[in-house]
Image (cartoon, rainbow over all chains, first blue to last red; front, side, top):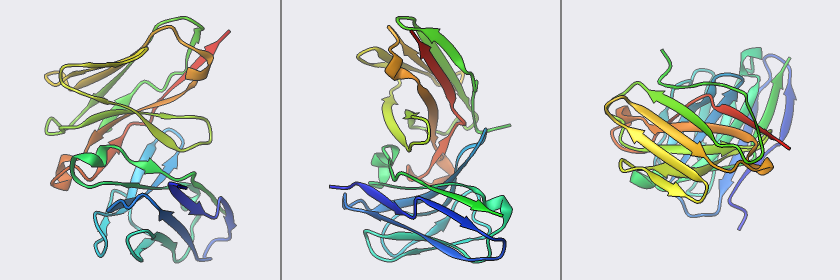
Amino acid sequence: NAGVTQTPKFQVLKTGQSMTLQCAQDMNHNSMYWYRQDPGMGLRLIYYSASEGTTDKGEVPNGYNVSRLNKREFSLRLESAAPSQTSVYFCASSEPGQGAGEQYFGPGTRLTVT
Amino acid sequence: RKEVEQDPGPFNVPEGATVAFNCTYSNSASQSFFWYRQDCRKEPKLLMSVYSSGNEDGRFTAQLNRASQYISLLIRDSKLSDSATYLCVVNDPRSGGYNKLIFGAGTRLAVHP
């Protein structure tokens, strides 16, 4: 039981390049989330998927797209990376409703855009 | 104004000390409250939920004051292993349910021998 896994762990991109961050969970959770974490700002929600087949914008969606590929997998795409997207990205999953308070996080992807 | 505000610290305390963290939240409609712990360069993990009546888990006590929109975490008999960043978290009532959480920026605790 791996929980939430993310790939890659580290990535360096040049401005304008694109990439997809992968996330998978094996806990049969319905809801999945993508966050970014920057110093002094806490975790900010980029996109979330309350259940398979649905996605919704969070607090900071600009410059990102997501795909809920199936119940297990939720990917985050940067179409044209910018230095402002340098951050640590966390994927998380939970049960919906009141269970959403307990979110299980992946180990994170450290992204640097030069 | 940030939706969830915490003193960033760091709080530097000796082993065995009692330390308290505070947090305020801006939306009075929030219904669910939590403390998460995040070790350096690791992912956040749920430490405990916070209930209206207050709750305790071993050396950790969490309290909620809805009237003041204030949440606290008390750690007694601090251990070296308690060194981490503690995140105050509330649900986002604008999401129409409990699906979305709002995270504070965290309070860093350093326990020294």
